[in-house]
Amino acid sequence: MLSPKTKRDVALVIPFGMVWFVFSLIYCILERGILGDLDHYPSTGNQYKFAANVVAIPIAGLMMGLITGILEIGYFSKWFIKKSFARKIVFKSFLYLIIATIFLVVILLMNALYTHSKHSFENLISPVWAFFTDYAAVGLMVYIASVILITQFYTEFSQSIGPGTLSNFFLGKYHHPVEEERIFMFLDMKSSTTIAENLGHVRYFEMLKEYFFDLSVAVIDFAGTIYQYAGDEMIVCWKLKEGLKNNNSIECFFAMKRALKKQEEKYISNFGILPAFKAGVHFGRVTAGEIGSLKKEIIFTGDVLNTSARIQGLCNHFDADLLVSEDLAKILTLPANYKIRSVGENLLKGRSKKMEIFAISPSEHAI
Image (cartoon, rainbow, N blue to C red):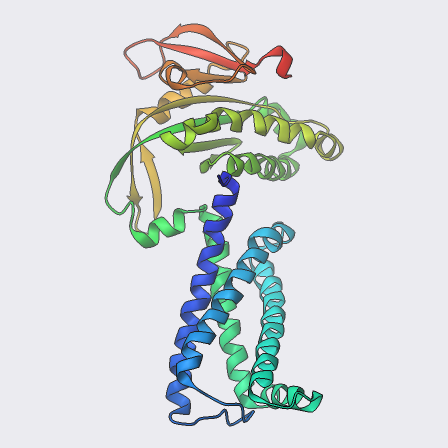
């Protein structure tokens, strides 16, 4: 079974392969239109067969796309995560262009090995040199650079609006309202007003960036989606099945706690404080759909959001870090390393009936 993080990474890598595959196929068609009935490349003299190229080049493009996707998701996106949008595009595109050039050289060398019966150094290098000193190389490199830029813009926009959201827009999944059952977690920083006053607005914002970045890893690991940021508040959601599986919605909260604890030295050194947080969790039916004209967004509406927020608001009153609704508590199957206790029935603002609220915490032997 693949972990949620691995599934997410695979889903992010596949579009890179598909984009390169499609544009490689388009290149073969354009090349056929330019070369016509020629049986060789004018610049290198290498043999040209459309039937072979229309298979080999798209496959090579698919491989290149998957390689760039793996590098992007596994390494480059992390190395350049704190760079500005423009800097990330420029730096990463330059690196990918170098990789693509090396990949192209390898393909030319393999083609030379296939077409020449005598494998001398001159027979291998001559076609490569002839290609890169011909104007045709300029056109191909510009074409490759364009594909790289397209994949980079896709990556950055996808990360900006959230994984999966861009594909939902393309596929029109929420073009018409859709009803879903989802778990929502409203997560709020403790004493944020006091912290902001002590740090000042600029340093507080810098801390928020680090704080949200460190929390996001757990969201990925436990199959969650960050729905919104609202000041120092993060709203995380799961489809009901995914949130209940392996208790992802609960495990995510405590994984976030551990993630911040590991970074305690960084926060104390840079900001003089280790931020803490509390959360309220509830599930229910929501309506999801696209709204907006100048700025489109996929939003959720339903009582479950208000209720989750109200539950989170009770954390300080009951001195609890994590509170969940009675509805969610009934369908959770928590392992022995967690203890759950009722904090009583409460009349939440906006509701006509009282709801029993439960606090969840690690058991003593699990701490």
